Length: 171
Image (cartoon, rainbow, N blue to C red; front, side, top):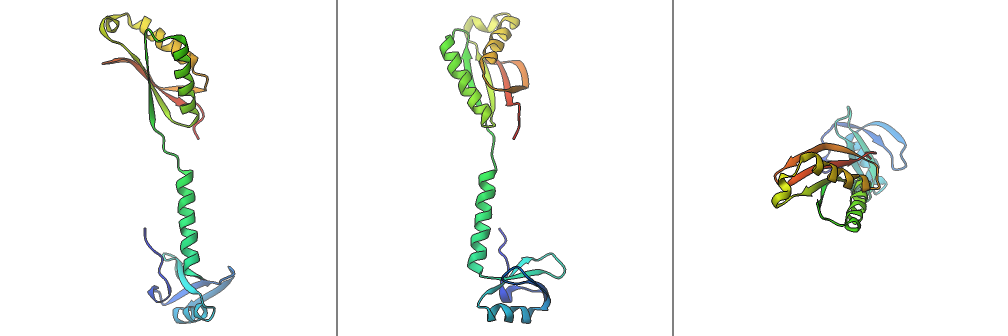
């Protein structure tokens, strides 16, 4: 995080100055701009160093830091990271348990996460017909009470069948 230059740290010979109330004071020599800020008992803070000439604002440095910190906090709160959550179902899982897992998956989808659904197979179940196993997994997918789209089609994995779901309406 690069900190803004203040008062005598500013390197430009002249700056475009914005007053304490937001009014435009025009292009001033650096020494004159610092003097005006000093007269008001405030600081001259370089807001836009890449502009020609650089833009500086007369304001309290502590207030400036507070506002920058507040903007960073708001940006962090608005950013939403998505995770891939996993749900595992088995051939013999009961209807009530399937409904509970489907509701959990729906909750994750509404939060914007991706959901990986695994139909776990063990022993002789691994060698059952693919069409039958796929139908079992699709039957669970129909229980999910949220709008979703299938991001990865149903594929055979070392532990069974799996697919990945995404929320239909991306934020």
